[in-house]
Length: 119
Image 1 (cartoon, rainbow, N blue to C red):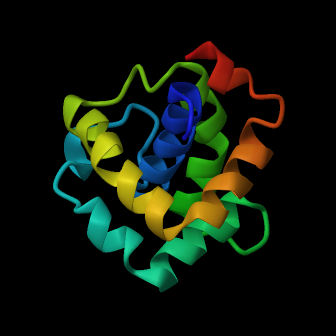
Image 2 (tube, one colour):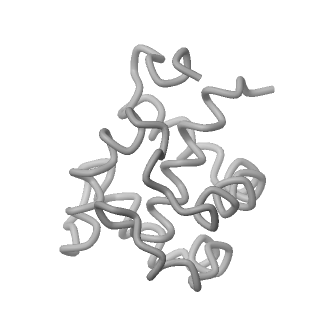
């Protein structure tokens, strides 16, 4: 079983990866179905590899990689309610289908467990 902090950290990462959220987290992304993107292996891997610094980044993915630490640090305070709901929706699917990626992102973006402890 994962702690609430771990769950929040990794769910936030997934939703940001899946939705390609911008700096202010506008509602422009609210109509994207995160399950469809998460199930599109090619698209998912491009974002994931960029975040892991293991592949070329699209401009959106590179921007996302720069913004991810501040998003985690502020507990997604700029997220729309729709985005927060999507975080919960995607969590189960991500853990079920991408458990290995879940652990890798946590190791890279929260190696000391700071964000997990914060929540």
